[in-house]
Length: 226
Image 1: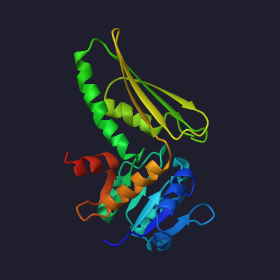
Image 2: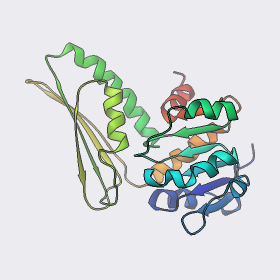
Image 3: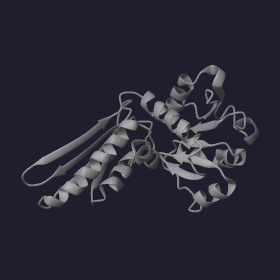
């Protein structure tokens, strides 16, 4: 397959990293509040990668849908329509969303599954998830922290902290009277999210991907063989 032409919506800290990674000859846009995307403009791309705050999704939702172009969404703090997957299937459109595009985070997800299952052998373990992000991040707790609790499938306290320009730190502690186990993930720079979004975009364009709303977890597991 030729190098994919990528339309980028959102030129903030993470969207800007995507722009930096895409060859200028394959870049469509980028689009932001000064250069708003339209369905017609987006059709010049093979795939759309979107990093806008949840509160800005409604402003671009219709244009992305109308374009029919496969789209990768990195927006958190947004309530997606309940019938979205059905709508995308009917329109034969492929979308993918993630709260965190780090491929390493999906390795963490598998580790959390082991911790969850193993905790059943312990005496009344307590779980605590703590996340730290830069001061510009509006939503709290982070979408990733919420995902960690979902993957854990146990009652867990989530706490949040906002300071400096921290790209993302997530830590899980499982504690009993006798011991504690810690699992920690730290993003060193935002390029890890941009690279993961581009990887996801490549997977979305494969013929084996069915129309509908996908998530990075299921795509990662399929690539890894379950």
